[in-house]
Length: 155
Image 1 (cartoon, rainbow, N blue to C red):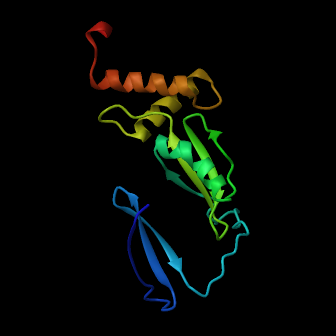
Image 2 (cartoon, helix red, strand yellow):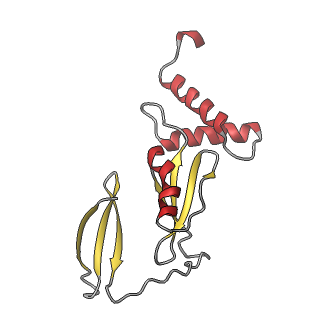
Image 3 (cartoon, rainbow, N blue to C red):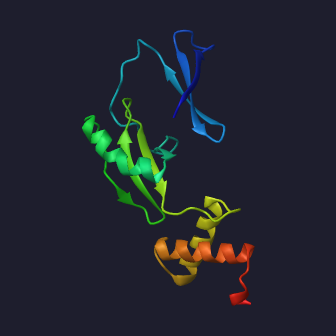
């Protein structure tokens, strides 16, 4: 994520805000204080706490994440299959759990990731399956595509 700008924290003068572009106009802000020491202990994950922050990455980036983290000596889970996406988890220097996630599909033109996931979920539930798998995604994409542009072959 590119650093967009930084400025002092107007509420805490000894802190700086670092604003990173997370894409689509969204930003993630980090609070930096030179006197603060990193604490690699995992953050609490109970009710009311942030469990993890998931960041969507491209397939090209995803295939490089684990090895590059390993090369830097940074612990990570390695690839994990989530059915509809693949994930790799790591902890930042302050113990926050981060996820690098890559969807296994590209939505058809005019549809969003949520549209495909909603349809794949409905197909999974109707079939009585435990979790979304590749065939649910493929069938969801077919149904959404036919919904937008019916084929003469299906009429």
